Image 1 (tube, rainbow, N blue to C red):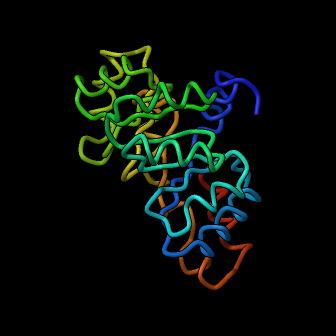
Image 2 (spheres, rainbow, N blue to C red):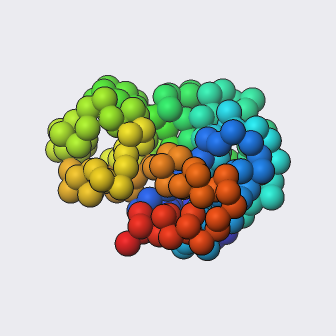
Length: 201
């Protein structure tokens, strides 16, 4: 995988992180295959996805999302997760991730939460839920914390992600919108890949 700073730079360079929360392990595995073909080197699988740990164990460069406690964090690391993502401050998670050579993306929304996540050791601060404040909220936070890398997630779409980048986002997290659900269910791989590639264009 390389060093943690190298992996952080690779994650930022990808610009868009798919955040998958699908109804079954089969659909998730199929979506990951399509996303890989589309050009996404890294994906996030939320822990409320069926079979999440097994998926993490069989997927290279995958991260674990919706990690809410240290026990879950340890299980994700043991399964092979290369980065851990929480929607809020989970004390000790960054330290645990770093000890294993993994990244920690910690959630925050208010200025106090963003600073607390940064001080906790977050490699990136996940601005969540991004849709509640929109690009203007991110722009205001970025003005105060220009050196904290922000990753807005929650409500980021193909239609608005350029606004988040213009407001100062280092990268964005995009949920299930990144895969065409009908095409995925129908196993229309070409359509799923074509849809996902639009986010990297």
